[in-house]
Length: 305
Image 1 (tube, rainbow, N blue to C red):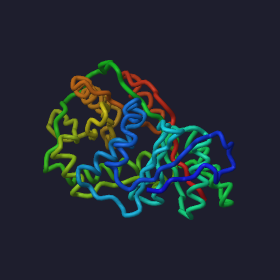
Image 2 (cartoon, helix red, strand yellow):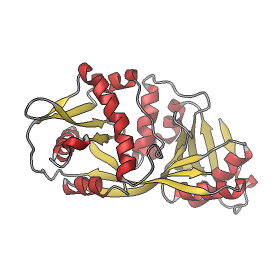
Image 3 (cartoon, rainbow, N blue to C red):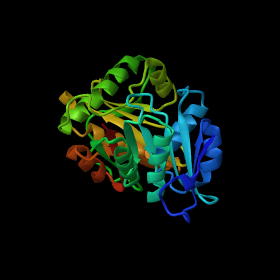
Image 4 (cartoon, one colour):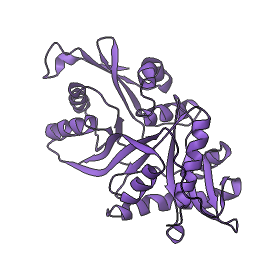
């Protein structure tokens, strides 16, 4: 564990902020779990990642988990566990002074950080401070928005039905996961590959299928025409994504029907369904709001050049 001493920062001495860097997700949840449980939807990315690693998935040797304290009280959290370049850190909301303190601490420990994801304004404040210290610039890769659904507004039902993914669907699912990010960039007007993301390998895709986290909408002929993935319930929230319909099957209501039915299943379990949208994609934002999803908070993926 590394503890950042607030006295080394240029901020007022009466700000009793402390940063704890942990390497064990179990220790992180023990320290920050009560804080995370207060807003399970807003904290969904961090909680699901921590619990996924506790189930046995391997992280990198230099992964870290961050607990932000103001005196004895936990006031923020974050992590750096992303396996894809530029290995961005993910930050939850924290006091503005803590975001700047984190930037200074990372700079002082000579940790190279070229990307930051997470809640605004925290990630922007941290990125701007890092850029100031390093002489770099901050670039927005993607603006995202987190949504939560409290009650499903049933959409028109298209032909076909929802079915769980099977072992035979693994190759198709991997291909559609890869196509999802390329299409998302294209629909948002970004160059292909400009959005950093993780592509599941066969082992992790099989785990999704065997855990019941992968769903297809199949048409009247029984052919898959849409895919929706959903994560496990963590701290009472379950996050959907990716949601993908191949171009030749779009505009027929498959995504709306699948997301609505899966969201209702989550609600029936007593959990809270949530998902992210790309703010540059008006189609997905419109579809989800039409079935009852309401915006919770804005986030961003930032690059530091």
